[in-house]
Amino acid sequence: YILFSHGILIGYLKGNAIRINDNQFPDIYTIATEQARSLGLAEVPTIYILQKGGSLNAFATRFFGRNFIVLYSDILETAYEKGNKALEFVIAHEFGHIKRNHITKQLLTFPSRIIPFLNPAYSRACEYTCDNIGYSLCPEGADNGILVLAAGKRLYSKVNKDKFVNSSNMEFGFWKWFAEIISSHPTLPKRIARFK
View 1 (cartoon, rainbow, N blue to C red):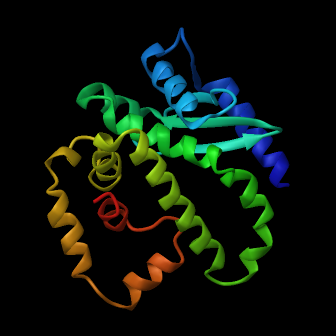
View 2: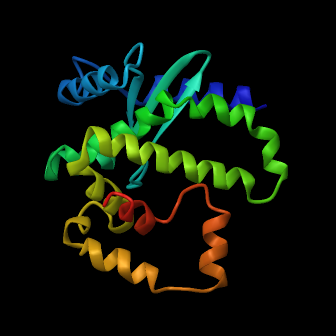
View 3: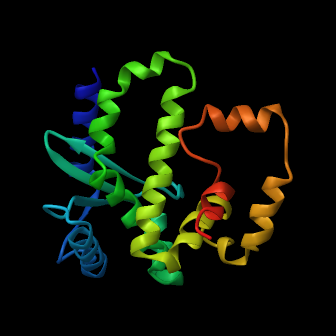
């Protein structure tokens, strides 16, 4: 079932998304090519732009030995309005998943899903690793690459980063803790704090 649904996703991308290459969004393709080379990837992953109703996200996936990156269109709109550094960080973060073989390892760690909290903890560690890779390739885009996820494409540049991180550290309670330990991603303030 998982293989079948993943095949449908790849088919959907091939039929509906815009493939980034040297003819479509060549500036983004140049960034991707340089980053793939910096990370020692054998080839540049296939990159698609997909419109997802205002969602600010990106993801990496793998299907039958081919690597794919999907960038939601609002991430690109933000880059074109505010500069490419946040986008460079996001692409490098997603390339990190490929470099570290996280997608393949997800399949191997699938049995760990029966142990409460173990799989989300591993996933959060993967996200921190990819943030570090993104930071190593584009440190000037790291903060905004995360802040845009918290505040959106129009407000993120107005957020006081230090206050955001500190205010989150002042919040305590069972539900905050529980929400984090069952989440696949670390909280955004924790991700930003690690860049210091």
